[in-house]
Structure formats: structure tokens, C-alpha cells
Length: 144
Image (cartoon, rainbow, N blue to C red; front, side, top):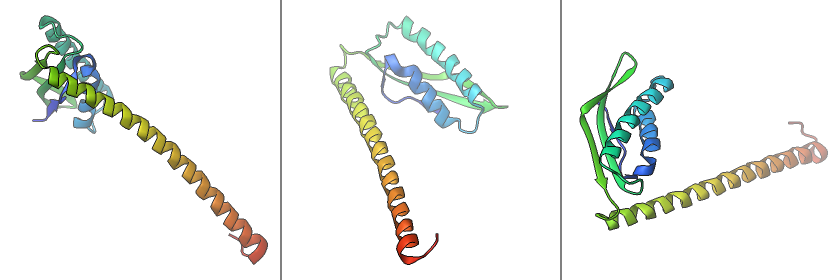
């Protein structure tokens, strides 16, 4: 039985994490079914978080087993676990999550920069190849 597990995440962004994890865990399934199941799951979690007065800055970890039957995701609600670490109760965890989020943003910036450099390198390689071909044609008499 597959399990959805968010890892530690801020309560404010749990829904996005649930959707991303579910897409990874249910590969090959119709994307609309994954979106439907994620929405169903997120509504249930939202209600529980409202009941428990979870603040959006709290850190949560959510786990729940599910089955895939006839192309549909069925949640095993009996296996649902929602751990909440409030900012007041667990300041070190909250601080660590802040550092993780900062690191994640820094990594996004680095990936964007590397993608730009990769594109520049491909353009330079193309120009070098064009120059080589021109020299071959004009000075060596080779056609390519």
C-alpha cells in the first residue's frame, strides 16, 4: 500500500506539498485523478487543522496510506497521521524550517542561473561550430 508523506513542511504550504508528493507517488495515473484526490485530501486536512487551531507558521508532517483501485485513489483515513509542531512549542524546529526554506530559495536562484549559463554555452558552441564550418568551406574546401 503506497503512503503519502509530506515530510516537515510549514502548514501554510502543506497543500502544494501534498499535490507534488502525490504526483510523484502515483506516476502513470490520470493527472485529473491525482488533482481530484489531492483536493479531497487537502480539504480533509484543512478541516482537521482548523479544528486543532494550527497556525500557518506551524510545522506539520502528514502521512496517509492510499490504494489505487480502477484508476482511482482511495484514501485509508484510518492511517492518517498529522503531526503539528507549533512555533511556540518547538522554536528550534521552526528555526530549522526557516533555514531550509531560505536554502531552498537560494537553490532555486542557483538553478536559474545555471540554466542561463547552460543556454549561453550552447549558443557559444553553436557559434564555434558555425565558424569551424565556414573555415572548412572557405579555406579548406570541405563541405559539411
